[in-house]
Length: 318
Image 1 (tube, rainbow, N blue to C red):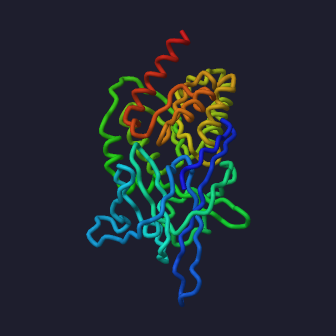
Image 2 (cartoon, rainbow, N blue to C red):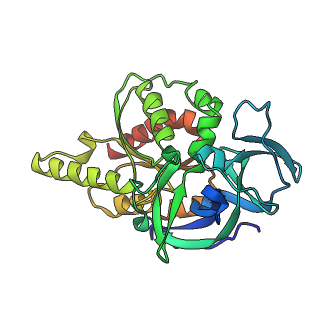
Image 3 (cartoon, rainbow, N blue to C red):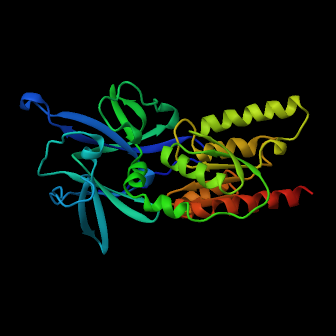
């Protein structure tokens, strides 16, 4: 099954989720329990049939199933059930979800896929006590679909944890600047937040980092009220907004649209970033007023881009 191209209106806070499942072995060999999960379609390239891969005894990580050829590429495959702590019931017909992050492809073995759902980020319920024994670091939240809870997984977080070379590369460069800039950064991935916090701290940025677009917007509203009460400009409190595009509660495109439609906030430069910036996604970012768009492999250049935008805005204001 190839990835479906479903057009979404910009700024509607919608996303598409591919629902899949992992069958879990139950005591006394009863019917397997179907664990329902979802992944943002924006990160999915395609779904293929699994060639009946087996875990490698010599693998560095027990999740690794090795690699398979895929149209001229080498596709590393992760057993998602092992990562999540689920004892999967193996079956002859299983699927591999092929994803792309940071210019590299990665496969995830699952029991099967269901369908694509169109949702809004406000449909997402924060993960909580309903999640039992699973590796919850990669669970973004849950959605209720026909009285069935589907857990949304951040597959990029898993890749980041299994391949820390990406993080090392992103932290390898620093920005030389004598100025202290104030930035607001929004990202729902804990691993990316930690990465950006370390990187910006080493680049002379005073960064406020939040979990999603809704938190970022509320922070901006509070700053706006403070500036009004103190008879000061918003630029005296904040220099730039940097946001992931795909986030729960309020996505980066909707956040940018709100900023650029606000009389006081629209003078703040906004940088948007995602794993992949396609032509369609770049057009969406531009249509809501995004000033610059970056792919995650270029996050090591973010501080330089941010400081350049801040200086450009300052020159225009003179």
